[in-house]
Image (cartoon, rainbow over all chains, first blue to last red; front, side, top):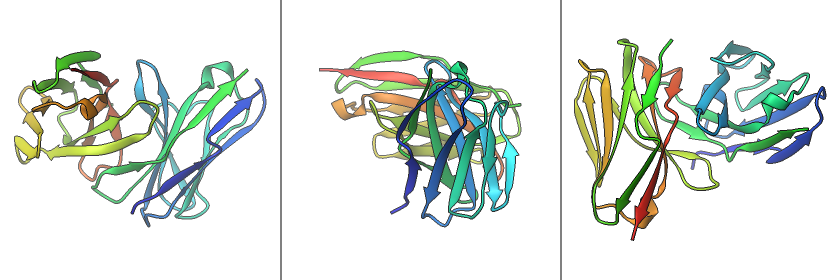
Length: 111
Length: 112
């Protein structure tokens, strides 16, 4: 069965600190995505990737970086965490022209 | 860019009745319309999709309708059951489906 895992599952960070969220998939999918979920906004796309060593900006990339060192792994980096980045973050993987498989989510609280 | 509007933010129906969730999109190039379900405290999972070459698709109790002219699509859940209670997200993507735009979600509650 398709599997997407995320770590950590929850994190408390301080304003101005660096945060790295990790995602690992065993689906052999080329595409991977990072979304954030806020109440009333649905899911908003932060960064995505078609292939290892390449990332693309999504709809709300400001304040975030992404890294795709291998097909299986996709990280989201907050260099200087801010209060407004408190949210639940979901990673997803997808084969071309097919549905997305989501990870369990990471609840990030920035204080 | 594409914008997807989900018209009902909340919806409550009696068990056994039908539920309908409506969405509209703005980009005429969009050709793939998936729906995802998020149960309380959980992640999202895919439930059904429709592509622009058809206007109706059914999977068991789920029916999706697509009106390309009006740029509108809808999810119909028939004979609702308690386990249908969840947040449902509609979405739209262009050919190849590399980048999906989600609606804000509809919280569906099934009343006994």
